[in-house]
Length: 212
Image 1 (cartoon, rainbow, N blue to C red):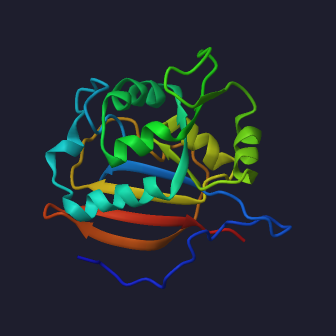
Image 2 (image 1 turned 90 degrees about the horizontal axis):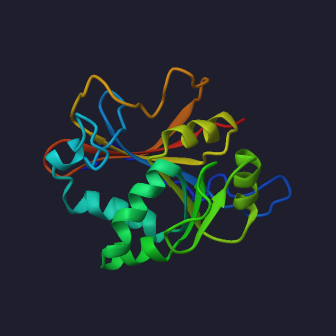
């Protein structure tokens, strides 16, 4: 069920710099609750209220939402904690989605990791904003950022996020790490698409930053 019909947008609304050179999008993709919590949706992090995403059926449309974003991307940018969680889970999985995840280039932001344990991993140890800005100029598809709350806030501070793809679950946790914390500066976002998926009130929302 589509909530509202939106004007069709170009696939890369922010995909060029002042010289007209195409740039890659940084796409923040998150599972969040109605009160903005994004912590431990799958339950692997042992958060006392974790695993909340598995309590709802997002249906085939929800699965397609996730498949579409992974297939239009060729790299992931992750914080250390999210990276380590993914690296312990995905290499043992198979199937189209898992094969794409495992084959992609991974960039992990960390001051403590010496090297990545997941294939195709590059560690970013310093100058995060500059390194990510440089990644955007390299040839390629979208770069996905999942989880990684601290990293997302750093990217927001430096105006490096191009698209937010949110899957909102109809649950209020009352506590937990939030995607948009109290330290965020004002950010105006434009709603590009909204859809209810499954039969239990899960929403998919796509936003773009409003840039002058």
